[in-house]
Length: 99
Image 1 (spheres, rainbow, N blue to C red):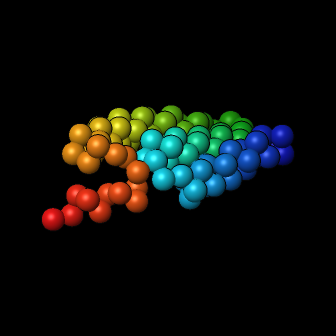
Image 2 (cartoon, rainbow, N blue to C red):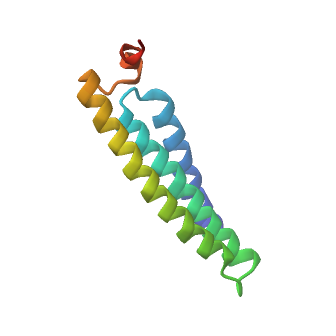
């Protein structure tokens, strides 16, 4: 079990670090997806070791992957529209959109 949780912890920590340090919205989105994938790995691992006959963790993981894909598509659409208006996708420059 530890062999799966350590890479998941490293993935999650890399995602948090990337989300906090990046100013580009695409890089922040990639970091968020990295964190979500680490959580999905944890769901499957804990389901496998706590209840090996049940499939709730795996079904929840599939549901979370589908939601993450929809969230990513929506976020990319918003980022593209922000780029069309502001010509930049840095988070620090988003105050240009205020009226």
